[in-house]
Amino acid sequence: MKNKLYRASALLLCSLVVSCKNPWMEKILDPLFAKNFEYKIGDRGPGGRIIFYYDPKGFTMTDNGQICHYLEAAPPLWDPSSSTVDPKKEWAEHDSSSPYTDFPGANGLSIGTGKKNTQEIKNVSLNNEDKAPAAFACIKYTGGGKNDWFLPSPDELKELYEQRSVVDMDLTTYWSSWQSSITAHCLDFSTGLPPVPPLIQNKDSFYCVRPIRAF
Image (tube, rainbow, N blue to C red; front, top):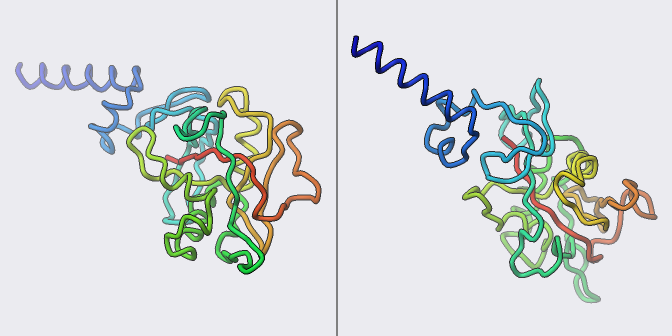
């Protein structure tokens, strides 16, 4: 009788946790119960931020091979040092005596590659934030108690654009984590198109940054 009561109580607790999608409870019970969670676009994710992408089949994170199903984005005004919706950062430093730093491993385009791109940027810069301000703004963000935020890849950034009203993005240009030599990819959120010249801008341009994470 007691065993049946214990099992019933446990099932009730699980159902309450799943139905409430409480990030605090999920953190305690993860990973035992986290797989039972089902989120929708606009829900709060484990990081307490806004889910903007869902793939029921899952996508592979190229940094560690993990299969994820969701992307969540930091909220507007996530950077307390900025008075705007999103801070504007250079992709990489540059001056007359210092060429652009090249990050050859930051070349992932698809969903699931942004985190590896960001890690490559961190590794090549040897933790020098001045060499890659946009990426390090995401790396340093710890919203929701999470430390796995990253600068989105081009396809991840495109999904942010598609859900811009849900995530409350500004109608301006945002950096992605893809780069090639002296240029990096960005997207104009007022049009959904890359600015001219196509796909790329010089790394010392100041554009907005929004961190995301996958789970």
